[in-house]
Image 1 (cartoon, rainbow, N blue to C red):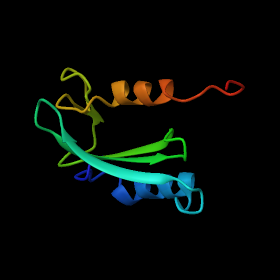
Image 2 (image 1 turned 180 degrees about the vertical axis):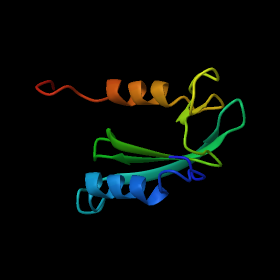
Image 3 (image 1 turned 180 degrees about the horizontal axis):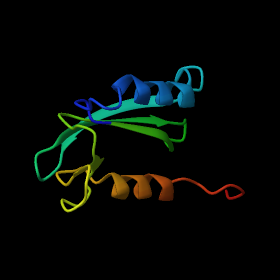
Image 4 (image 1 turned 135 degrees about the vertical axis):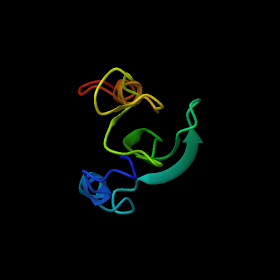
Length: 104
């Protein structure tokens, strides 16, 4: 979520995370936050909620100075921010890291 988004309030994304993980302590989730920047200079905070085996269950990204746009989208598109980070790449990475149901 862009912290300069004037269309969708940041509290909406906070509420989604809270509804998903509830109390991290109650679910025994380990919460870590890191800061980073893209090659284009966009800064962000990434918070990961991981289980006891260090498997990420939820990731929450806050993009500093970003407005209402798809992060990492093509500069030819509308409502895109090509400076990144690339939201599509990060979502695919996250989903591919998840175990499939019925697998060990």
